[in-house]
Image (tube, rainbow, N blue to C red; front, side, top):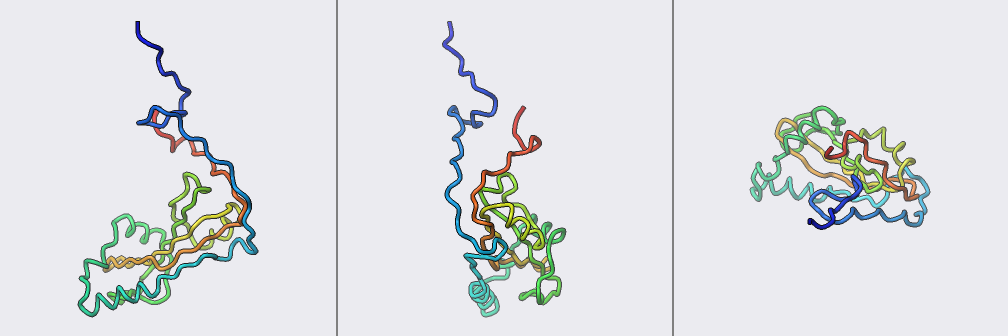
Length: 171
């Protein structure tokens, strides 16, 4: 006679694991934020960008080292990019664009998505904290560079939204 079968409620066991999925921790204390739409913890990569361009134009780097945009990033730039001030620093093409990504635990399944700049203030009031990454991309020469990161949100921790049924794995 076989031993008892491991019976679990659907969705309580992570695929490839025999242990139940960990329960999410409750939200922590609120962080005081004056303006949720005002960027905080800003990191500007202008000096790093200048160094990369200096190396490229002065023989310290190959064009393939800095002009290596992923095909998915190029496609995102084509369909979702917003015009950047100035042209491409490598090929001088005037169609340089910014692609803005948002990441954060509170975003749940929507973390890692592309957002337009005008959507960010509304998101800042809906979520406690998330990080914004701005990447400049040239589709002509494939130049891409992370130009800026910052945090937005109202500081009130929230649980992530439920994963929609169409994003769930398995039967």
